[in-house]
Image 1 (tube, rainbow, N blue to C red):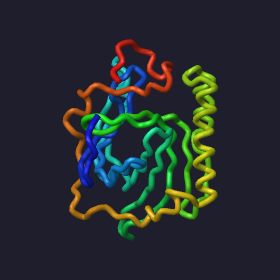
Image 2: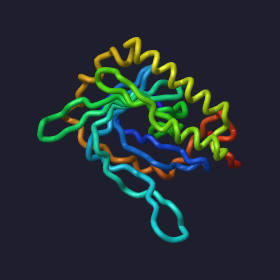
Image 3: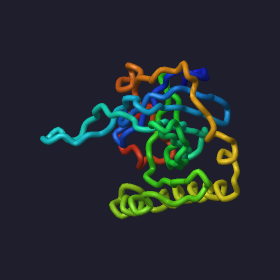
Image 4: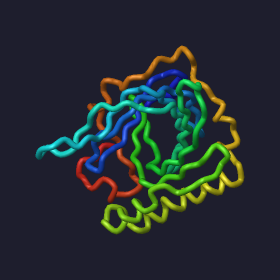
Length: 218
């Protein structure tokens, strides 16, 4: 467990695989670290680790990829979602394009950042707060395949419904003015900490089925 981070600190956000290993991983700069909120920023052009599928028997592996947007990620202790704000930078300048509600495991702090994992279901929200579900068919297919239990999928959708109620009521964080936020101009593009793939993963204790392996690290 790390102490509170300061604005501008670089941390690693890691998605943990079902065999309890670091998977996709991103470098972020800390914007705010409070009791009720961890706000992280990744700029367009940052290098991160993404799954790639090479030919041969080795299967998928992690390779370098380039992040394509400015994204502010609002994460809430103990909650099963985070809220992303997207900006695009081009010859016309920097403009806010959307919110994105990502269903995910409650995050766990590590010595270098935070660990979580994606729960497939998402909500795309326009700047004027019109919303639509994304990947609800993928979540249903994962249930049919036995990847997710039906009761868990119901919990994920219920979390999304609670966020939708906040969207429709124009409640926080959709009324907090985050869309006007700008990063510190002195910040350089962050890079993943060297230990991103060596520090033992933390796992979510909310469901044993999520990490069906022995010798888990908490």
